[in-house]
View 1 (cartoon, rainbow, N blue to C red):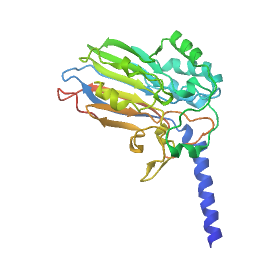
View 2: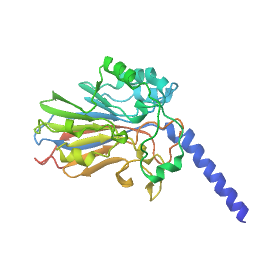
View 3: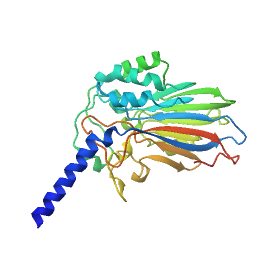
View 4: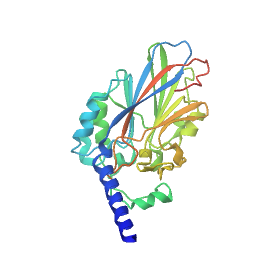
Length: 296
């Protein structure tokens, strides 16, 4: 009896792994959220396309096809880990050309862009965020140069302001907190009357960014946990926030945090379970209340 139970459990495990590798990992989808955070009476909508953790490799046809069919948005943002290997710089640049925003396109980098990804012991993720690893420098600056030549703006501890649809947007980009590159001094609000948008790879500094007055913080890095279980959710998220905040739209004080589960995985962990890859369209709409406090 025990032998049969063990065999059944092994078979179930093999089927789950096969599903995660061959089906869910490339089961791309577009998720939409409506955020009522524009000033009351502002009737022109704003759409933000949020992409994260694409982890491009050289042969990534299904992901490229998915991106080419995404709807156009006013602003496109990418919150890091564009590369799954340094050799994929050209692939990433070409694949991201169709998703540029109609008005503006911004990105920040993640650790997998700065450094060459390498195999890891998966169980290390259960002991908190990984820090201080030795790593080989990647092709981040080539990636930045190519993207900027194509109209993207790299916001590494930098700000930008745009005016569109009759109102202004103040954008702050924070360099990757996961590898100790952020400088929140660059994120002070200068135009608090404008909609505040902060983009960052890891969501770790989201509470501070909301406290600085940003209405919306977008981040990635967690992969949504990558492996989730019923009633439990994410097993790990490789950041300082609670596992319950590993993905989705989260109310945080007077602001909102959106954590993308991302579109890719490390090529050394090509597996997702109950956490499909996502692109997100954030549909920003007028508030029914003057304090910008309603969402969804």
